[in-house]
Image 1 (spheres, helix red, strand yellow):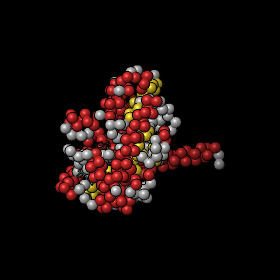
Image 2: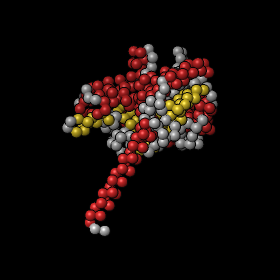
Image 3: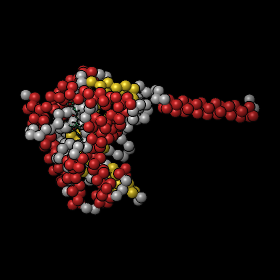
Image 4: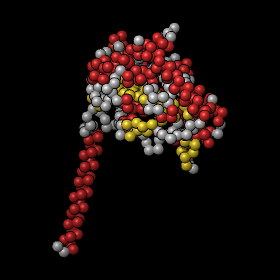
Length: 367
Ligand SMILES: NC(=O)c1ccc[n+]([C@@H]2O[C@H](COP(=O)([O-])OP(=O)(O)OC[C@H]3O[C@@H](n4cnc5c(N)ncnc54)[C@H](O)[C@@H]3O)[C@@H](O)[C@H]2O)c1
């Protein structure tokens, strides 16, 4: 073969390779467009006729939780008195013509609702009514979470990821874990992302910077008024690089008082203003929680999740406690090695103490 023929051959190989590459790109693009290629995932939402449920289901059906290329089948569970409202939610889902939504199961039967679900978002629960003691609310929820643990254990898909939203979220998740022993503890979490996001929001407002430039706040502990929002490791991206929140705020007094209480009491402030609880931000936080868990946290960024304690940072094991976590390939891991000062230690222990008390109350309700 002379050099001319050799060059022609090379040219042909190049043209064929480029054509094949472009062809595969076009096919891939078309597949995303018509949503072929991925099997639908089944997502359970309990308490779906309620406030958070109403905000959450369209977010899931629009791909905000699992991505724009992931078809979804929604399983909606509520109780008998809410069945008519639940059917109304189903009608609206159909009327919204969401391209990713491949089916809706609306039921009051927990076993049917849990059938083959890949993700379970547990929003349903018994609300605290006027005159009720903390123990009475706990007792109602403990029995709900005990029953639903059994339904998930028997019917959910293997490796189903579970997020408990309903209050008391950490303790409900713990009861679910204890009554579903075959579900790995790594698959059971509770929502503290709303509090994490509230902390990001407060720092962004204080510094007048875009909220997406603020990262690595931490929400330690219980989703209750003892929670500890911590900015000691948080940073802000600025024109001159990443800077610590402590340095930029430069107001230790504010960070140790008003900032913490504002985040802790934000839920109550919203109820006072709206006469309804924070459904939109809770639904959005639930989407953030599952999205980061399944699809991964961005490099160099952590989020807060209520997870089963392994004793990290001296927090007793056997509690569902909110830690800073990173997620990769569908698995979370607690961020290790952060320096904890005396102020933080006290706050982290106080919220752990409350969780130990809640656990004891929950166990006493079971007897
Ligand atoms: N973790 C968080 O960050 C966070 C934030 C906001 C609200 N919450 C909690 O989320 C829960 C839901 O809030 P909401 O505003 O949507 O309340 P909601 O009262 O509007 O809705 C709750 C729904 O749960 C249903 N339900 C009751 N028992 C059930 C059961 N056994 N099985 C299935 N469904 C059942 C009710 O019928 C109702 O439709 C509450 O417990 C609230 O305190 C948690």
